Amino acid sequence: MTTELSPGKLYQQQLLDRLGDEDPVLVQARTPDLVRQLVSDAGQHLRTRPAPGEFSVAEVVGHMVDAEIVSATRYRWILAEDQPALPGYEQDDWVRVSDYAGADPGQLVEAFSALRKLNLALWQRTPASDRGRIGAHSERGPESYELTFRLLAGHDLIHLDQGREALATAEAEG
Image 1 (cartoon, rainbow, N blue to C red):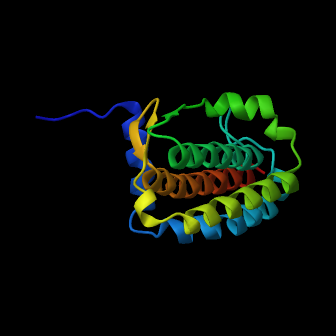
Image 2: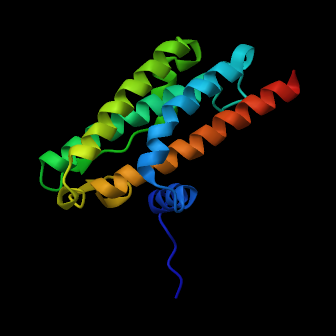
């Protein structure tokens, strides 16, 4: 008997697969420098979309800021409340209303770096026994703090890949 995964569970599995055996702490710790480098490498192609409806490098970075904000909130809800509801969000809408295509990339990098530093410090201060606390994600079901933390590391890797691909496409097209 085969069980088909819901879209939320499939996405969750994609993030975990991309993370693989990598240490989520190390992945998350190195990501701010990789984001900074991606923005620097993008140069004149920072705001170039590889195709209609796909994110430019600037929009990828903005989305990563949004994901860090959302994850920070989820972490704290999970740790502070008993099985809190964890709402999903529509990333394309958040990127659009935040106008990341026109945002200052330096501000985005600094915001991401500062939020990430705070979230990593929270992880380090949290006793291992509390990392199993659960929240109820609206699209994916029960998720522990530890799982949410691992998912964000996979998210980093996927969106760094996406940013590099957007840049490669823009450079190839001139």
